Image (tube, rainbow, N blue to C red; front, side):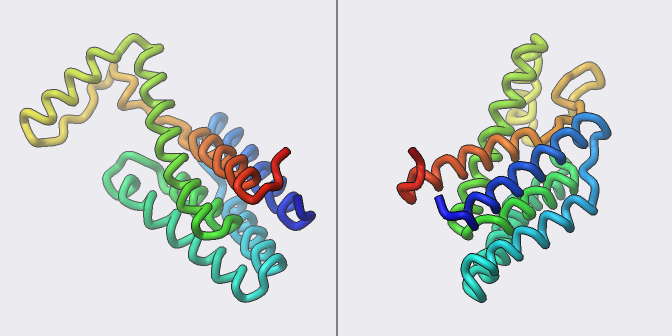
Length: 176
């Protein structure tokens, strides 16, 4: 593994770890952490690849932001989660940023399903979705449903990013 890739990966995982702790404790991800992450991500991309690396980082930001923004607009995600995913994109080549976003969305779905399952609300939640399909209109979860409670999505972003970094290392022949 190259030194630049190792340092960049450690910085990214460290930033995500801090974001998860903040999200769990305060239900928010500080903007200063996002700005620091964006600066470090773009700097590491530029250091490793020059202008081309900077372009990769900017495209990674754009891809991650664009994929997560609709969930924020529809009320299914907080702004901090969108900004955190964009930060992840700043550290990765754009094609890996795309995979990180997709793996994070999958991880979020799996986490949400497991929370509903563990809380014993699977049938209640499936029933609400069935009604949504039949009514062809959104029906908000009731106050007693776990589906209506905030979920620290930074956990899913961390899991999706770890999966992508692992895959990136093995795809490039650097994993052992």
